[in-house]
Figure (cartoon, rainbow, N blue to C red):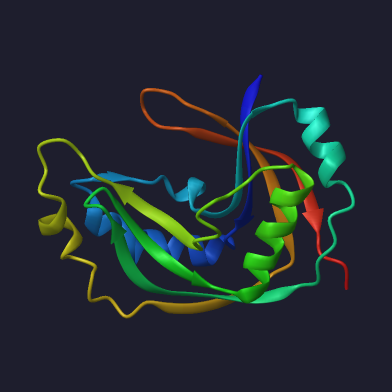
Length: 167
């Protein structure tokens, strides 16, 4: 079995901008690879790919606007960029329900930029971006089921299936 998650893929040009302005300055930490920048709607964990795809096949959502702004951190370990989109929260809840996954904490929309690294002062590194006034919007027209494979040099995310918004 493999590990899976459902996410919003950030458009390429926007990923490039996020990487240049917010991830590169965090080089002393463990930065997320540019191609791995995404917004997780539901972490599934180990599962059967065919079963997950079947449960999600009739997911129904309309295109919506997401706003990326507000930079923050979790427990001196994770630097993130906030996501504002009420529809993303509803979609995350619907996906969790279809997959029978209970998320006690609820949806916390964010895009991970970097993780803490042993021996590096997190706040010293984080200070380089914490006052950045990043504020971008984009249209979410699809969500992706990803397979995640962990490796020493970092995770590799592979697109398994795409689910397109209904217009």
